[in-house]
Image 1 (spheres, rainbow, N blue to C red):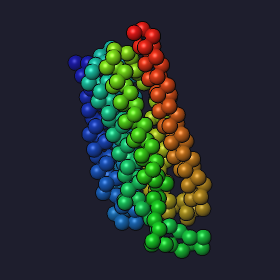
Image 2 (image 1 turned 45 degrees about the vertical axis):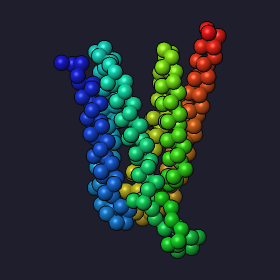
Image 3 (image 1 turned 90 degrees about the vertical axis):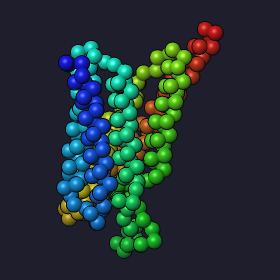
Image 4 (image 1 turned 180 degrees about the horizontal axis):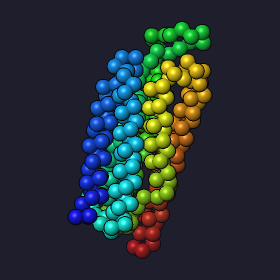
Length: 220
């Protein structure tokens, strides 16, 4: 019976991801901007993170790690992260650019999340590259497991997603209490640190793949 619990938690996380994206898809800043939507999305993402930790912990503790978890678990992680950043760079979070005197320009827009499409491209490119390298390497019989930098990347990406949700949802309150500038700096810092770690972890996996390839060449 116990062997199915980690897989059930992994499957439930996929369902949580679907509900999370429904929340982000329906939400529109200064449109359908009901704060309860992002509050619910925040809670759902936190629950998804907890189940991510719990299913891995239980699978190792009960020694029931299997192919389903190895495939679906990282898949759900990637869906949650990539989907979140895609939504954050999309039309539901666009606002007019504000000039130096507070006037709004309807001809120039930006995202209130601070996430630009180029950032999403970097994150997506890293995931596609690592997935391709892992497939090529493991296809030759060599192990290509997750590295610490990859786990660190996931932590920073998740923290950044939560920080963005809180910033967007409470931006009015932050402006009223004159904390908005500091909160925006924190938001941007989290985003750029996440991008840097994402790139670094991608380079680490490239070096790892090169080392595996050289080892194969020496054996051959």
